[in-house]
Image (cartoon, rainbow, N blue to C red; front, top):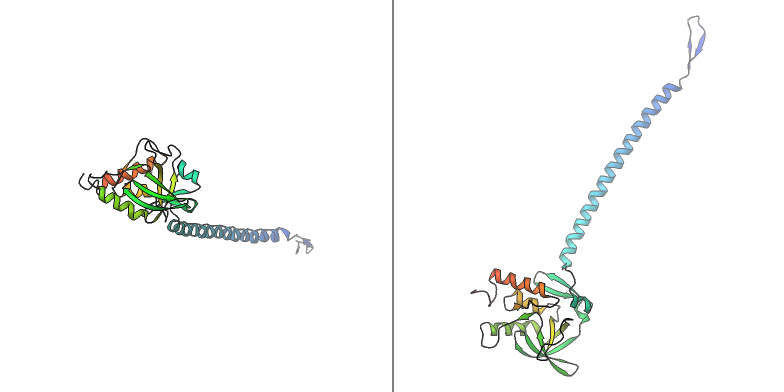
Length: 221
């Protein structure tokens, strides 16, 4: 770039500072646009991920029951406990073999046939009314309904048998429902509080039924 001086001579004046200033301005505007674009893209991506995770979590909650800490007995069997809207179930209960129900003795005792042998099983962790006591019929009939024709037996490591030689087992319906918890939840059984891997669960079910005055045992209590 040239300009004429006072005496008419041409004087050279570099124009690169002006071009540099203009270039810096353009670069600044470009960087600003890029920065805004990056911020907007990051925000949209985060919102999309949150919505996707939320939807996935909702769908998962509808499909998957709430998992609980594994009790010793359940962990030993390879299954796990899970809470459904209608009560406790043993997820993966098919690892436990099915046995045939031969006879319902009362609300917490039944005879089953396993390997051509009839065993008397005392349902572990609960106590139901004895014959002649109030709610005996209701508890016995409910056990029969929950058990159906086949059940699964879940061992309790603490005590495999009682003093009478009966097999002590948690009782699992063919569909995975934990029958012990169902009877306590429905106000038809009291929880055994002295021992057992599922003691706290069963005590909580009885406590809830008692507080709500639910079932034959607590309706008039």
